Amino acid sequence: MLAAGGLFAMVGSRFTGAEDARLLILSVGAVAAIMGTATLLLRQRMTSISVHLGLVLGALMVTLIAATTDNAAAMGAGACFIVWIAVYAACFFSPLQ
Figure 1 (cartoon, rainbow, N blue to C red):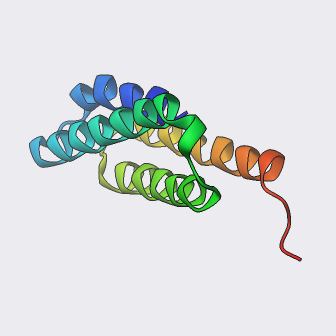
Figure 2 (cartoon, one colour):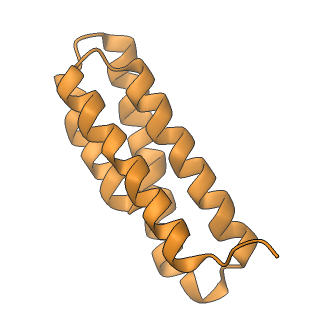
Figure 3 (tube, rainbow, N blue to C red):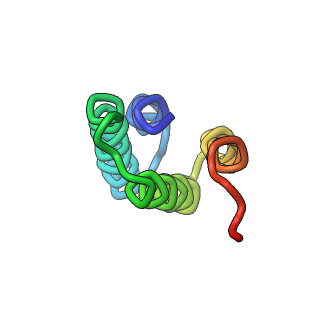
């Protein structure tokens, strides 16, 4: 999900009007794509805490992109990724005891 979201952000960054926001969205997208690829490659060695941290960082990156873009369509599409973070957490994490 991180890799796909990162690629989505990198491609979508060109549709943002403000140059500063475009660079930020491109940078955050690149970080997300790298994190997602590393997670895929290192999935056998990941601990529970690293998966939790990855989801938190993913949510923060989506929030940062949605907060900085001036394109309403990109903001709405990007914010939809928050739902997938919640779905993943609900399906694969156990509730606190």
